[in-house]
Amino acid sequence: MIATLVDNTTEIYDKSFLELNIDDDNLESLKNDAFKNALFYESLKRDNIDNACYLYLLITSNFFSKYNFLGYESQFNLEGLLNTYIDYKFCKNNSIFIKFSNLDKLLLQLGTPQFNKTMEIDHIFPTKGIKVSNRIDRFLNINHIGNLCYLSKRNNQKKSNMLPNLYIEKLIKENNVSLHAEIINNTFWLQVIDNGFKGNLENLEDFQEFLNTRKQALIREIIIKLGKEY
Image (tube, rainbow, N blue to C red; front, side, top):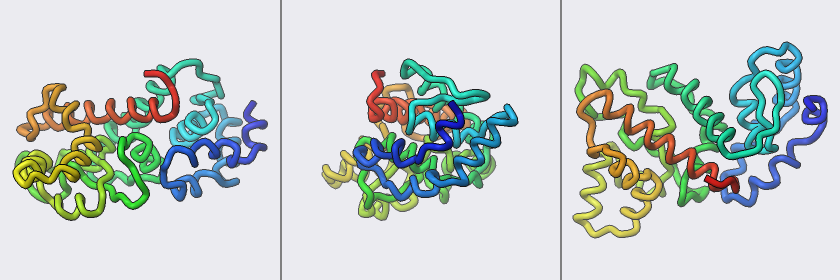
């Protein structure tokens, strides 16, 4: 099974991605011989295969791998793997300096309801400016995928370093329907509010709840976009 996957070209696996309106440039660094060789040798060691490798295989060719390659039969395996990857990378390493990889960009693109290739990545709660307090802000995992969304360049520039609740209020007052609809949809803002989030951060627990709700919304969108039932 492993040899078959390694010997095949990844163009076969990537074909369906071209129909999803994502930025296919992100796939280039993932579909090469170095990737396949690394995966093969890691599997021979029967050690943990890199999360990025088996997540990529899962998404592109319907295989799940942790210590071996296993076929998955339902969306629950995909949901579990996405949770495992995101939690492993971001929640275990609570730092603003975590590198956001091409694979993470791909997941964010798949999890964005209104995505196009001209959009830019925005920090929903910005990297600059006080979110909770000077004492607490350094513990906020601002680069967590749950705190990122794609916005049009116009929306991103207009938002700048504003807090999301204040920016959304500004758009409502300006009756800016198009920009308001875009940020509401791509941040899953209404779902986050319905889940009990008040719109602003008063403590670390508020931010963690926000990240968890956003993460689940992104995973749900990814599963739907990949054609799995949710």
